[in-house]
Amino acid sequence: MFSKYADNLRLSELLRYFKIISKKPNIINFVNGLPDPRTVPVNEIEEILNQVIKEYSVTAFQYSITCGIKELKDQIIELVKNRGIYGVNENNICITVGSQEALYMLFSIFINPGDSVAVENPTYISALETLRTLNPNFKGINITNNGYEMDSLRESNAKLLYTVPSAQNPSGYTLSLKERKKIIELAHENNTTIIEDDTYGFLLFDNYVPSMKSLDDEDRVIYVGSMSKIFSSGLRIGWIIANEKVIEKIEALKQNINAHSPTINQLLTAEAIRSGVIDRNIINARNIYRLKSEIMKNEIMKNLGDKIEFISPTGGMFFFLWLKDIDTEKLLEKAINNNVAYLPGKYFYHDMSGYNTIRLSYSYPNEKEIVEGIKRLSEIIY
Ligand code: PMP
Image 1 (cartoon, rainbow, N blue to C red):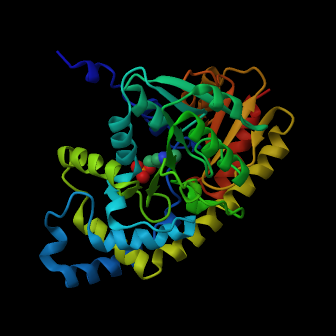
Image 2 (image 1 turned 180 degrees about the vertical axis):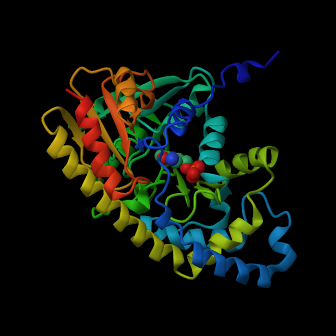
């Protein structure tokens, strides 16, 4: 009945876990990457919304152009200067429905079945799930607590590299400036297009590293950004920065998908950037997540230190643990019985190879829950 494309569609593994967990009210949930409620500036949003509706009236609720309204593009051009990106003009930007739509569209315009696509092992689960529908030839680049496996990237001869170089989901790893330059050099040798997913780039705690895009003078890096972790995930605002040829294809595809991102959400976001609300909110979110990550780190070291290895997160929302020869999917049942839940890390590996890994999200649980959750976890990990 269905097309070949539809045959490749699967519901996210995450949903399965959400369903199990939602039935247990007392569980401590390290599964979802839901932003901390305190990082959504609801009062400012209310004020700006009123102001925008007064100023734009019906226009705020009308159709608008496919790749986004000028007001927001102009503000994004300003915002990404914080990531070292200069010289962007309106024809280099497309506003998307979250960065997820950006990734879906970019993968669709670049990948034919069988094309070699390099991804970090581990990498962002939903990017992997989107990529799988296109049947690429995956090339994994291991990230371990020893760093980034450059040789695999060199040997991959990939057409496309999907990378999350800053405060990566799930590993918390941030590529150093030197590593970024090396990747761009290898991409030059192999003529690889790089998709840089900078969803957490504004949430680096202390160690500012400029985006890959800012280091690229060959126009081979395509930058993807998101408002989800620094303003509001529900508004579904993301963006792509790329050369005009790429943006033209994206615009044609987006016309077919949803015509444009919601006008009112774009106006609201533009004003939030212009008025400094987002700059302030970034500092607030960074402080909240830094503190939570420190609490989680202390508890992990105290309770699990000799049983696991981990990368200390440099930003973002996640810890990634390597256990000693334990199948973490099997272990999850025990964890759930002990009222704590995590995501088995293997789902972040294109080949499901990380059977002994765990992703812990500290973004949503409060400080007390983080302490208690790690204690519960330590009771079932030997
Ligand atoms: N990329 C990464 C690395 C993410 O972690 C997420 C959200 N968890 C996204 C993209 C998608 O974010 P959104 O669509 O909300 O912008």
